[in-house]
Length: 81
View (cartoon, rainbow, N blue to C red):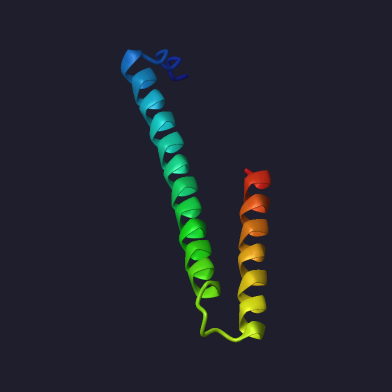
């Protein structure tokens, strides 16, 4: 004996699918904002360290390149998304 065909999805199923989609989109946006905030904080710390007058010139150059690397990394992450 064959099983009867399944019932078509109702309004509750459609609303549940929509809610899942919205939740997924919101969590992705939160992850993107968290990543941006982390990169901004990292660059801010490097900028403040570079502005320190007691810092050696060699360390100043290293921190400048580290900040540039973070900016390039942020730009690369933007291209991937």
